[in-house]
Image (cartoon, rainbow over all chains, first blue to last red; front, side, top):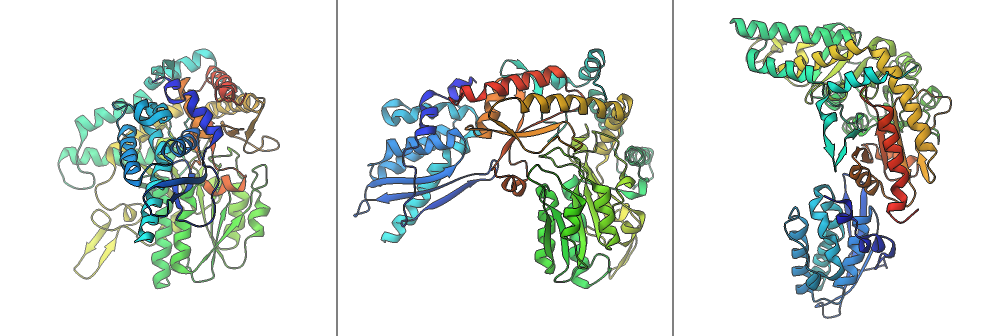
Length: 148
Length: 422
């Protein structure tokens, strides 16, 4: 396990760029907490008026470079997806993260998020990478419940 | 105050096989002894040999194996008690120090529910004093006591440089103070607290004084009586012993008064359908089949510690710890939590690296073979008090060397550059 497999330049860049950073009032934010390291992240998914498309991710939080980059990369790659598309996307991401290095994210499907593939070899860091995604799924459920 | 010679260090390190392992292609530099110390081969060998040849039920049965096991268990207790300056019947075996504190806290809850014994019974408005530097294990059990009884938690402040004074404790005491809970050394700051002065205040006020001695237990001479406390707790796995066993030490008087918490076999004399009589301490706090192999292993670990010499280990770790502090403090953009001015420190230093999260610091160090602790170290309130969320910690054991410290300091100096902060 090489350290550079984990910390690709894209990750270090997104740790600083943090696309989607900044929460606006309203919506259905989800607060997620990682008790082992004390990291936290709050994320709100904004849907189109008909509830079918993800218009934006807004998030704030503090944590390691993996958790911050994962939130930023998700924002960059998944904004504009249909809800159904995002659900499949998140499922595939989770499967790869939990694969202990056996499933790599393809650049074709996951774009720059493929840079997070190396995380799955570092079991202790999978939770860091998943923090924003768990918040997104949770916020999505809360948002869609409000539409029904 | 001096470090072990290279020859002495080599002999000690030969006894700890894990130190020959490699991590990420580098020889292991183990700087996480404050979380769990490594195990000496001699103690693990004895534990294994004992399990293979002498396993039997303790305190029951008349056959030879059971009698031998009972004798070995009692000998282990006597030997561990002697190491900490206690009498054997003052030493209650538990799973770990956390359980030891919980045992006292639960006894307080049980007594409070029925209003006796008076010493342990708290009422609404009574006060429990803790400090800002406590590990969660010496905080949360008391929060539960407060929740169950209506008692109130009072928190003694540490200074911005991490010092706890007896005056700070005194300032939160009142005529309602019933419990004072303090650690001998903070597991984040590494600073030795004035436990004797604090315990004196607590006992003068008639409070039950509980000392968490986990971080000093095998890093200097632990004399449980020297604190002047009612209870002292510590864990084997921070004393070169096995996981799964720890101890609650109490004065003879307080253990006699303390109500039983867990009940069952092995802690009784007469049993009828409606009531039973209990054995005196420590048996009344140890129902069920005891931790036989662990007690044997712990006692042997401490014999090994004694063979090296507790004072020599303390001197080695203190001298090396001072070098480590000096090495870390010199690195730009690294902030140490706690001072080294005018305080006694153990070989432990926690710090933050500007612009790099501790999780990333720890991962980078691991890639250089260095095992450091990252996170909040089970002390979230203290981190908040010091204005940070988490930190990275280096801690020393008897096997640590100046090479370990030099490698760790050199790696730490490279962290910011790796993450593009340099």
